[in-house]
Image (tube, rainbow, N blue to C red; front, side):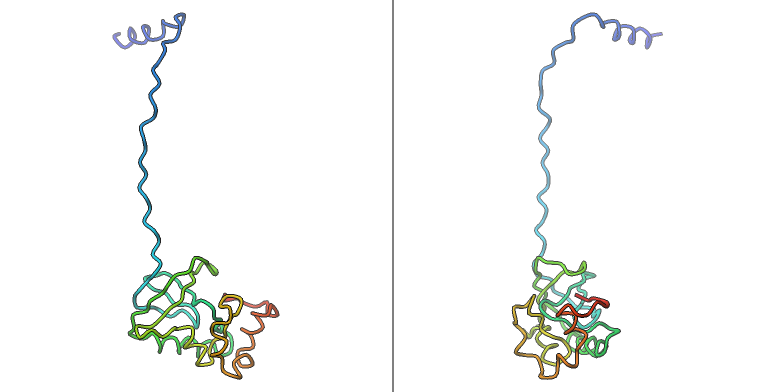
Length: 166
């Protein structure tokens, strides 16, 4: 019965003018400032293929080079050369803002300062990709590298429509 009286009292004011309510601004919402994304990752890496590694489960593509895919000629050799370079080493990855097929792009180096991409190109197991490196590694390519890694070379020139690793 008491509930009924309260309801009658609330709804019986229909004829009276609405009460003026004071405007109160909504309470200020303080959003936490997101932490800036790290620009450098360090750690032991897992080698995915000749130009892709993972540090702390983050896939990273080596900037400026193109190595053959695992199912292409010289692909497995490129991967195992990368494994030998990185084995037991703490890799430093300086991240770039661009993405390549959902992979972060970075310049990666060994503790002694050697650039992983430069080492692969020097071994003849990766090619400089001037579109992304501005020719940074071209001088390190072996004389027969573009002939040996013809699929990667064709992909760079837009003549190969197969699986893309870039």
